[in-house]
Image (cartoon, rainbow, N blue to C red; front, top):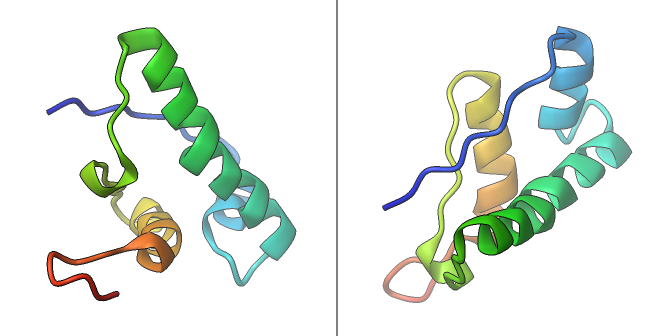
Length: 83
């Protein structure tokens, strides 16, 4: 198992707009793109990881938990193959 962490912004207002899809949908979409695509590409190039999406996870605490749910839920597939 490997965990890849990303630093958060110091400005709480900006961070909450990035983490919460209902506060600023455009800003959230940009941040979601960063996590779903850019961080994965970086980890693949930096560490030679090429795990399929089904073998990855996103997690967080507090506002980071909201981000994890908002980003992960639409992509979530259980072992039974349902969302």
